[in-house]
Image 1 (tube, rainbow, N blue to C red):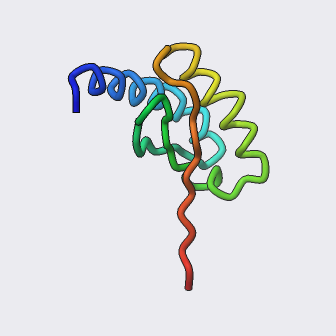
Image 2 (image 1 turned 90 degrees about the horizontal axis):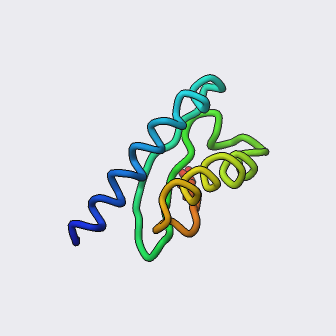
Amino acid sequence: MLNNDLEIINKIKLEIEKLKPKLEKDNGSIEFLNFKNGTVKVRMLGECASCPIAHLTMEHAIEASLVRKIPEVKKVININFQIIK
């Protein structure tokens, strides 16, 4: 991984940490998973993982913030893992 990629990832993680308190107020959270080719992958946690309007939070709060503040970020994708029983 290039130093530039590490710098970008650190910026992304910092911005995600700034967004967490708002999600935690609704018993949710967010976890950084990956950054590659302009795409950030995250996982919504807690109440956010099953919230019917999580896509709006993702698009209008999380993605909008990261794209605006970090030029290398082009989009953010929520990766929710399903547990099959």
